[in-house]
Length: 111
Image 1 (cartoon, rainbow, N blue to C red):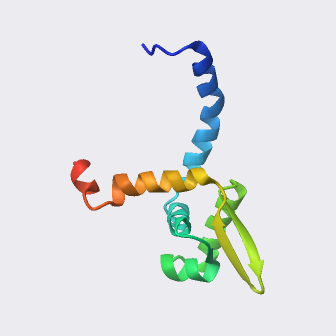
Image 2: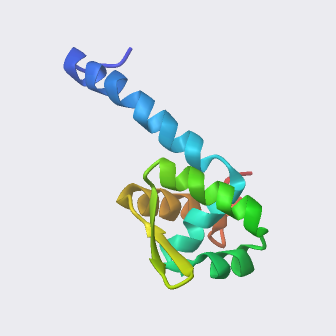
């Protein structure tokens, strides 16, 4: 059994819902790709569409989900909308995911 004080367990239980919601939001492949693209900096919707190959209606839906979760924010410049990461946890999460699944030797360690 874990040798963790009951206050730490209570704190973990209080935060598990937030962590689960965070993971659920990023569990969608298209939302994850959008977040990955935004780790490199702010991008317009058009740039995201071209880069990721996600058609505009689907991309708008995924952006809305990330925005509602507070993970990204947008700003309007003329007719274009630019998005960037709003939550530093996303960058940490994406960097970890990249190291685990995308780095050159990631495939070798998961087999």
